[in-house]
Amino acid sequence: MSEFEKKIAEYKSKIKSSSKIEEIDLLRSEVFGKNGIINLEFKKLVELPLEEKKSFAANINKIKQELQDIYKTKSTEILDKDIIEKVEKEKIDITLPEKEFKIGKVHPVSQVIDEISCIFSEIGFSVEEGPDVENEYNNFTALNTPENHPAKDMHDTFYLDKDMKTMLRTHTSPVQVRTMLKGKPPFKIIAPGRTYRSDSDQTHTPMFHQLEGLHIDKGINMGHLKGCLNYFIKEFFEVNKIKMRFRPSHFPFTEPSAEVDIGYRMENNKIIIGEGDKWLEILGCGMVHPNVLKNCKVDSKKFQGFAFGIGIDRLAMLKYGINDLRSFFECDYRWLNHYGFDPLDVPTNYRGLSR
Image 1 (spheres, helix red, strand yellow):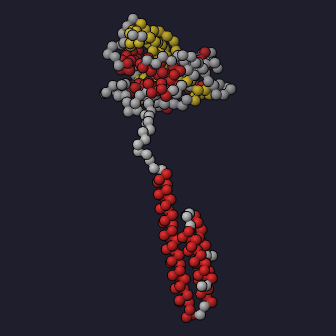
Image 2 (cartoon, helix red, strand yellow):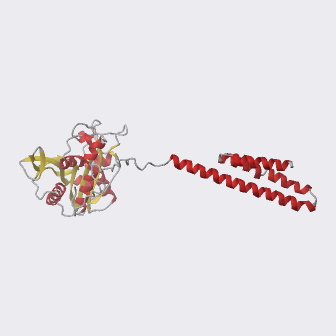
Image 3 (cartoon, one colour):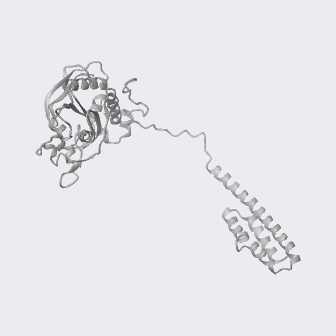
């Protein structure tokens, strides 16, 4: 037996006795690689007489084919064995109880924003959005806020620079300013979103949600404002009648200004919205101040309109009986599971706003 045949016999034995695919691949490289024993044996052809070359090459090819067959058979055997072992390890016990599948809930604030948007969209309002970080002009100056107004104090507003020119918006009214500056009247929008003020207790949080409404057109008056709000409150609280009163108030950006109260009564320690002998403040509103229109490039001699601001969190508390505003932001799954809404419970005016 030649040296070459001895090596081939040795490799055949090693391949057959291997138990890992890595070992097989290493042996294959040693046999069939560029510097493997098969290629080295083929290089001897140049030294042989012409009449011996044919039989020599045929013999090498025969050995090569045998080795490839052995390698293929052994590789398949090892891979099949590995798959069987893996399947055995990953075998599922179908008698085990299934894992609990928890469905997420929509936060009451998100639900209320959808409900409000749905109501106002029915009467022609569109939804506008703006950035949480605002400049001083849009947040205060354009809205006719005096230089010495308390809202501008550092203990009320989260300023982001020493010059007090950039801040977290204190209301969503800057969205109205941005809308009027980039377009032409008429305007009929609502602007829901996050707002920020330096305040925190049972009914106030540093971050809360607010919705501003704006309607600018020719011939708009307080009657339109009252009719709009009367429709909204009845639809939102899903009542047929609503007792409502307007109390004179003051806001820099509206003139005249008013606070809106709605009637309610207590029944089994629950607030029943609609009619009753008690009053509950719910929002602020008024006719847009001419200075605001002027700052926003709107001709106040041709156009006028009304604006209103609503606390979204407060509406959610009133409608769904939530007592503490801070619970909105505590990320308690139990609370959300109780007060939250099914993701498919999308509010519509046709099948009801809420469950």
